[in-house]
Structures are given as C-alpha cells and as structure tokens.
Length: 444
Image (tube, rainbow, N blue to C red; front, top):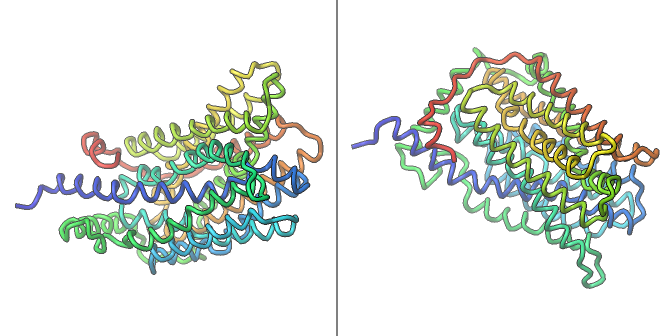
C-alpha cells in the first residue's frame, strides 16, 4: 500500500535534505575559504612581499572580475546541462588556482592569480541556487539555501582558527602564508572527484529515491514553477527591463560592497580595535576574536532561514538583518568603549551580516515569475559579485590615506544601510506560511 501523500511529502523532502545538503555545505565551506583566506594571510603576506594596502585591496577585488565572466553561463549550464560535471570542473580548477597563490612574488602575479581563481570558481554559487530549485519545493527553499549559506560563516570561523595555526609553519623554505594556501586549496581537488562520482543531476537519477518518490518530487517542483510561470519565457533583455530585478541587483551590490570588504579586512580592523582599547592587537589575537564574530553568523543564518520559511515573509527578514549589521558596525567604533562592549557590537554585526542571506535569495522567486527569476538570478549575482571589486580597494585606499579602522568600519556600515533601504522598496508576492507540523519534520 503506497504511503499517504503527506507522509510521502515529508519522507521525500527529508531524504533529499539529508542526502544533498551536507555535501553542498562542505563544498561551500571549501569554496568560501579559498576565496576569503587572503584576509587571514594579509599581515604576513603583505609584510613579506611589500605590497601596499591599495595593492592588497585590488588583489582582493580582482577575483570578482574573473568570477563575473562565467556567472550567467554557469547558471545556464546547471539548468540545461549537468550540475555534477560543472561543479566538478569548478572544484578541480579552483583548487589548483588556490594552491598556486602560494607562489606569487610580485603585484602582477598576485593580480593574475586572484583573477584566475575567480575565473575558476565562477558560476558555482548561482549554479547551486539553480540546482536547489531542481530538488526543493518553494516552501523549503530558504532552509535549503541555508545549507549552502551556512558554509560562509563556518568557513570563515574555521579558516580563522586553521589559518592561525598554518601561519606559524616554516617548512622547506616556505612561509606560513604559503603553507596556508597549499593546505587550504587541496580539499577542493579531492571534492571535485567526489562530486563527479556521487552527485545526481535530477531526482530521477538519484538511486536513493524510489520511482514513486522521484516522480512526486519532480511533479511538485513542476507545479511550483507553473504556479509562478509567465505566459511565455522571459528573455534576458526583458528581465533587464524589470524594476524588481534592478532593485534586487543594486540592493545586494550595496550590501556586498560592505560585506566582501568586511571579509577581507575584518581581521585587520579587529586588530586595530583591540589596540585602541588597550588589548593585544597582534595577528594571532585578532584571528582568534574574528573567528568568534563569524561563528555568530551561523546563528543568524539558522534563525533567519527558519523564521523566513515559517512565516512566509522574505523582504523584512532581509532588511532587518542588513540593518543589524550596519548598526553593529557603527556602534563598535564609538570611542571610549571597553573591548567587551566593542566585541558585543561586532558579534551583533556578525549575526546581521549573515541573517539577510537566506531570505534574500528566496526573494527572486517571491517577486518575479519563475521564468524571469531563472534569468534574473544570474544578473543579480553578477551585481552581487561586482561589489567585491569596489569595497576592498576603497578600504585599502582609505588605509593608505591615513584613515583608521573606525573610518573603514563606518564606510562598511553605510554600505549595509544603503542596501537595506533599496531592498525595502521591493514589492513581494504573498507567500503562505509553512504548516507547523509539516515544517518541523522535513529540513533539519
């Protein structure tokens, strides 16, 4: 006797979550660490190679030039070709490029290595977003996306502590920062092989789903798409004429201008704030405190993904997280505060800096037809990553101009606040809240 529909729904959704989300989580931990570990290596690398703050900022930002080139093609390849093969290609090449960072000696080599790393990783994030739409019904998307986004603060926290130890190495004539890039780049190559062997493209290819389960899942997702489908497919040109697409794009561009710069410069800023409050501000202490701030982001993602799916509300969850990040950063720079209070503000900023992400990436399908959303995701993520080219060089120039860490943090707070204001202008389709019993038994 086949299971009842509600029982089938919970069984399939839970099975998919446990089979796919742990692997996706690990992939993004490795991806974001290889993108962002430059910030952990900054003090030692810049000191040995003699780079200016401006050169470091441009090196951090030029990653996103390479990334942009394959942004939209990457999402389309996942939709129309093979996520498994595309993700494997990405992992293998970015692992090699990340390890190659260990051997840069000049500014030109630094820029080329970062550009190639961006080119290698391009298409991974939008590809995963599209991939999740093949496996998770609309009501589960924010929590499913959290399985990916959890990798960001976890990778940064793990990277802070791991890099802290690797930076102490001095083997075979290589400095600690070089060993850091070698050790942290290697897992991507291993995972590239794993993905090629175990990741299914579509439900009907998953051997761990029964034919009935695969059919139910594909029919459910098809019904979701049909519910928001326009009368005809939307072209790129048509999507670019939609105001909502540009509000989403400019909103995340403003947020990420602050967010990406925060990733690359937070260890430096924490060191400066420690020194300003009379605490040891050396590299090892700064990385220790920075890791705790990033761990607070795990809390932000966990809470926002569940609240957003449970209530069916996306926009104000997103805006609330962005405002919290801006307020925490701004409050942390007030002079005369003890370190304990400064650290509380930074932790609140850490919560907000990640709280907004799951509800934001559920917004395209809540504000656009399915056809428009599929095209818009690549455009929006292009703008999200273009922001990485701006924020870090601006902070580098601010530092070289003699401005302190407080001024840099205020600039980042202003970026977050601007993004929140833009997102608040978006109109949203009403989304029904999740059924409480059903909600609790599907995605962990």
